[in-house]
Amino acid sequence: MTDAEVKCLTMLAEGKRPLDICNLLVLPEIEVEGMLSSAERKLGARNRLHAVSMAILMGSIELEHNPRPE
Image (cartoon, rainbow, N blue to C red; front, side, top):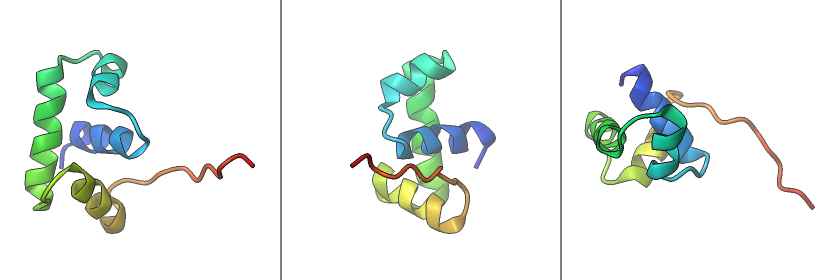
């Protein structure tokens, strides 16, 4: 995956919506959607959730541990 695809998947894993990702990266929505679709295809994932899960398990993306507030 490209660095941009990994960044988009990481943001998706953090709970951001594609439109949020567009705004944060200052990219058109079609470009972000394309990167997410490309990442899914490269990973052989069935959908975006599956792509995020696979990327985490493969070590392609890492998430900071943020415990839930009590």
